[in-house]
Length: 145
Image (cartoon, rainbow, N blue to C red; front, side):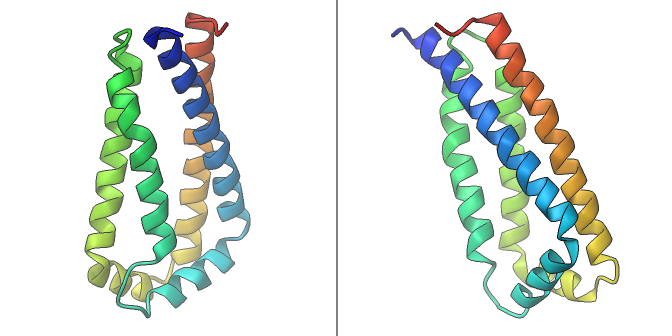
């Protein structure tokens, strides 16, 4: 298997799995917004950020870094921009965990937490749907054999 074929398979699989995870988690978050709000309020009492959030960011980073290298074989602006966007999301989310003292104060003070969570879940579903389109684009541009 050559590197170009591996790159195509990697992005097709990565986009598909990420899209399924985003759509599933976004749907769950949208439907269970009160339970998620209770979870966040409970975790806001602790000084350390939730281990679940750290684990999610760690795995997103570990699966994004190979994409940065593979976006150059063959060079594709779409994959490169998506990988840079993913790294930017990891960076911004990581900043929120580093600033957990301020974040947990904001979580405790928020009166609109369930509506913010519902909106975030809907955004996750929309982004997951767009990533499915990227998977379709990769598969149609370079058929997987």
